Image (cartoon, helix red, strand yellow):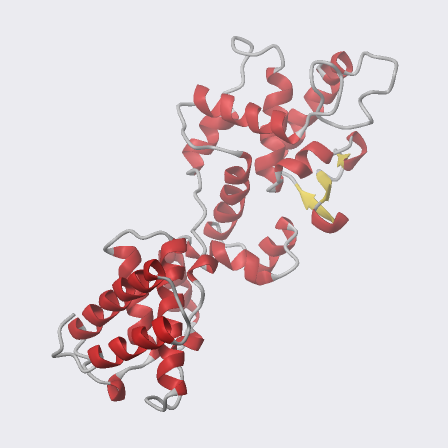
Length: 305
């Protein structure tokens, strides 16, 4: 740790305090020392050699750099942030700074990964994957996949659908989401037609038992019982493999539903309602899609574009 940086003596003072006064173990102190050495290296590269020029942006840049150039996971970056905060609290308590710039930094564990989505072509391949050659219950699988994509369903919501939740006349599904909140989701013609065909041609065969084991659910297993979440995951993954797709799971269909709507020009509030999100901040994760469309919107609607 180069002494040319005026932070170095303060780092040594802080580590001494943590060893003598706080009684931290040698392993913990060594971890702090490594993290602070990384921080000082980043500050030197940014041209910051004293406290006067330090602000929260420098700290945020350092944390982002740990992720981008070193590939550290959020859990490791969270540890670096904890070290920085200990150091900043020491500086504040001893009058070296008048405020703590680390307090405005978001915990990396809260950083959200952008959801993976399927392209429209990949989605088409997945929906068309079920066939008679690979599954006796291909019609159920096709209807289920169509419903999940058409309505942005979670696996649990798919499992919970009742036959009476499907209204073919209005082409809507009544979906019961988290917290037992219900929402009406319109579905397109393909999904409506495949669900109707499944209800007419295959569901009676699956619901052949007289003991009401089907519980009135829409999608049933070969034993006549409602499909569970695990089975839905397995069906999605099996058909994804048939379509030549990898890392596909039920939530990826939901991500694709939201992303394709926004790419097509849907309003974020509308997508929030269709997904059943109580807070729009949850839906905003999808605003990464189609930046070119955002530029087009700016050009068309901003008076100075």
